[in-house]
Image 1 (cartoon, rainbow, N blue to C red):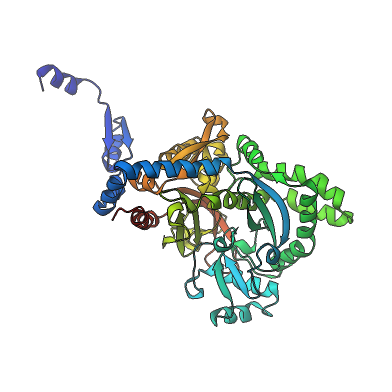
Image 2 (image 1 turned 45 degrees about the vertical axis):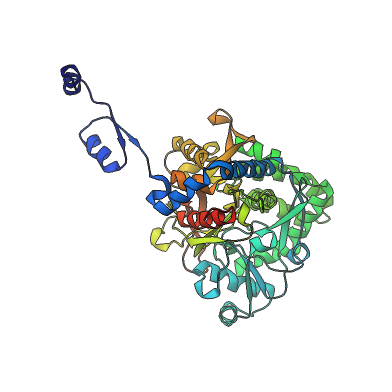
Length: 478
């Protein structure tokens, strides 16, 4: 260093860029020294084995095959044509759904490892189905192995939070008309104490009975009379109205009500029942969430099984484990302990009351919505405790680093019409150290209480590390 450079260093204002440990930047800021903090992590979190696998997957023909396969995966996602076509009893949609069989959210989990709200929902749904006379009997039956538990995803279905799906619940049916597959999700119960958050008292069960006996059949009749409701354009409009389709569905819930209200009125033969249906839909800002979940499943199922594709086809959690599926590895689950959400709590509750994250609703992040589209919904950032509204776009920008493309049909006006980040690549997750951001509700850890807050959660890196090992073996990289 010459004298001129030394003089400038000692006399001119410092411009500091700190890479790595944030404590160095904090110390400078405490002395009122301007500093730019660069968030940086070593590839694969510093794990030499994972870094070595990533490097070998970037070589020659292997990389070319993966890139072609991921282009195909993205093409299938973007060309999908999801349409809401019906509401029918679950046993009609899923013939394999037998008596005393319960589909739940997340990857497979046994009764002994289930969390409190999951056990509460199972007891409640057993009473709803008439398999048990009360909650205590239902719990004893579950512990004795009298119910068969399976993930929703194994049957073309998804469910929010606890995700209960049983024979006599009505399910929304979404058909991907590009590929011909159908997917299913129960109807959103509304807000407050509900079964998806582990609620199971008589109020919860009576609401489910009304949905089964009155609202579900009426909704199915109305949808069938429309010949189906295309959903992609509806989502595009919702993004422009401030929805991200996970925590905020106000716009899309209003749009679907506007489309269905004439059909409900046209097909109704009881004005009082019609009034109840319209009031239920109009009073539920989360009504569209379950439709968005079935839409997400319908888009992603045709992406499974593409040789050499490293795109994630499902993310879900059961309150105990977080699981992902990867295109090239088909139906295999890669799991790790689920994490606790960071967020805001309702009055009287705190993180001490919270259950670890759960639900199949992360399927909406898998298609580029939810936390990936936070830039479209700045109001959500404050609600879920993710920062100030102006930070919302940062969540979306970060997710562009771990996806293979963007969706030109689902754009965010406030971000100069950026297409939502689409197609999570397990390689990019591990290379960058950026885990997928998921918007979520927070359930009380005890059964029967219900929702206590909302927040954001990160997918655990261990899922992607396990997925990478299996994927590498599948494509011939030891």
